Image (cartoon, rainbow, N blue to C red; front, side):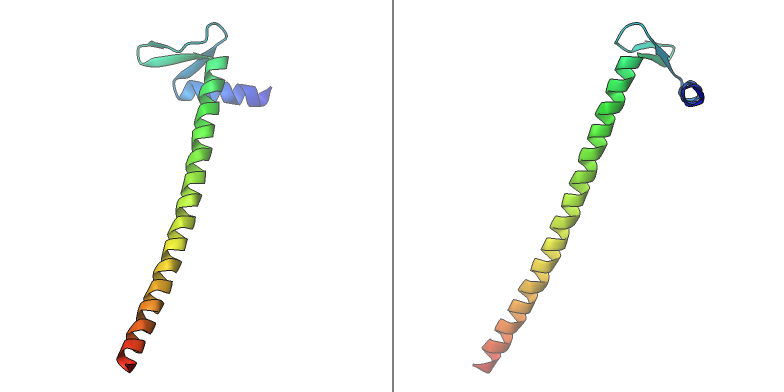
Length: 88
């Protein structure tokens, strides 16, 4: 019960209130009112989007690391070709 009260207080502090009627958000004087279902859906969508962004970030880091390894390998290969060319 204490967590629920804290949750409602936090929502009141950010100008969001929850009503149990309706599923659409209503805007009155720049204050949006969400039903519990609509707020839960919005939180779920944002959580899903955040998880996808984190996955994309990890994949980007992996790709960057692979590119750096390829770059180093190509420079080594280029240097070995230059040495071979100078030998001839």
